[in-house]
Image 1: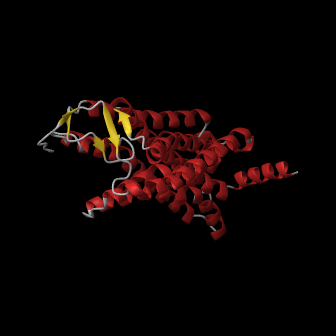
Image 2: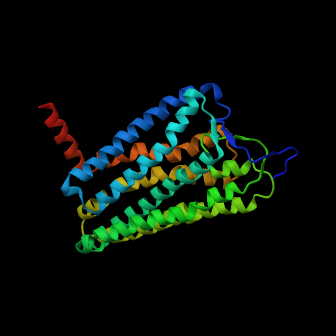
Image 3: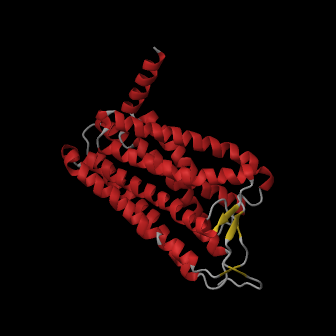
Length: 314
């Protein structure tokens, strides 16, 4: 229950604070944000081009990687340019309708990325448990259904967010202490009983990230069980090497949200600017690092890049 001595009606325009407490340093933050954006766009666009052009890579694992790159590309596109506008041009005002749009699309792509990582864990599970049936189980039709399920789940889970936010009638302030219109950041400045909104926010977290992380851990538990049954250390190492890139991406993607949730459970209160920086890591670091991890650890992609550079150098 939030109380307001003085309140304002639903504003036509919100003001995004950026990173409160670090106003004088926000110009410096624009440099890494811009570099992250450029690297993420180039890296993910390269992955998409490689998978499309190299016929030998059009198998389930790489097709799911292309989906991941498309989601990452969408995620940085809807987040970083707006942040750079705040840091560079002080463009902090955002209309209420644009705020609702951000509130839907930014977490939409995040939940889609989580679902794609779960699909990739299932891909590795099938590859190790049923290698002879791999292409049969994960046929193109099955992959299309998996991707559609990932999109449908994200849309179903996040459609209520802008609808519920639009019903908030009065606010303590029109300043959102964030660098984008996050649902819970808007709810926190609303007046009246917001317990339903908080419950919905927790439901989204559990039904998306919590659900996916549980089944990813389960998948890799079964994968480890299958690997331990391999007759030789060489066979075990070869089986695990196919999962290395995916495990790195999973650790990178889920670490910030797990750290944030654990900090709240344990009662550790972070400075607001630190919380916002960590929350921004959800959306910025994985899209930048994912292409680098897969590019460095995937033999076929390394060979394609080296051939391309070799041809251009001649």
